[in-house]
Image (cartoon, rainbow, N blue to C red):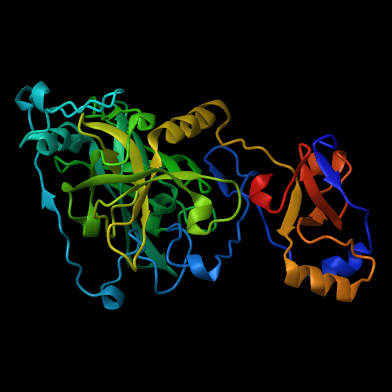
Length: 395
């Protein structure tokens, strides 16, 4: 670590900590059904130019449409440009109309009238409605709704963390029940197995005496801008709702949306998603899950975002191995320096280094990798791996 990071001389650190607001970076809120020791909290501050986009787990007023928290009084009646599909027989699905994504650049030329309907029919029976009663001092005040997909016949369901986990790390509800309703009308009681708030992915389990319909996971790395996809779920508790669109971007960076912390990438589509779509699948024309729908931008049309299924699979592997997602951690709180901050620091302490860019380290967690590498509060990072750095995202 000390080889890769170059620091300037240290100065009066107490004055820096007193003069600069500390921004929390790289933290995650973890939930594990088996171990509560790893529950922590995140505070995120969005820059003003980027307040039009945010994870649905963040309460940002006015601009964001929170699909998991319907409020007719606030948003009015919503116009849903979607249609409903029923379960279809696998024998009715034509292979010629699969619309599969090919590795080459040559179009398959097989997109037909029934392509979207066939893809939806493959996944539809595995899409579920997730409903959680909400209470206030013992009185049921409403329900939190969302969607999910059965990915294993044993009742393993993939959904969003913010649908089943609240901001305190556990879902508070009357009787603590998670109700899962299948497309055929059957209802089960679900249990949160694992959830990771940083990625907004969770796994819920239901028990059934008979095998349940499940959906096949695809390969999100094969998606290209312009590929057709469909979003499925239960917006406003309207089960079996399907909307179609195209992939707008396959690697939309979290920094593009104004998110701090560890970098993340999303699939951007123009599929219509609304209240209750959170946790539902994004499906390719082969009827495979290629993403999990988690958020949209309220102040614009056709800006929806999904977690790529390849990333989801890695998260699930972490769940299976350790019950939580393990990520790199430096134990440093960092702040990007700009001209205004540098001027304020120099005014506060004349010994502040003469720099124009860099990263201030106002806090170091004792015993962390950063602490063991020799970092101290007040350090300024100017190089990483021998190259100049100007912002945290370069580290």
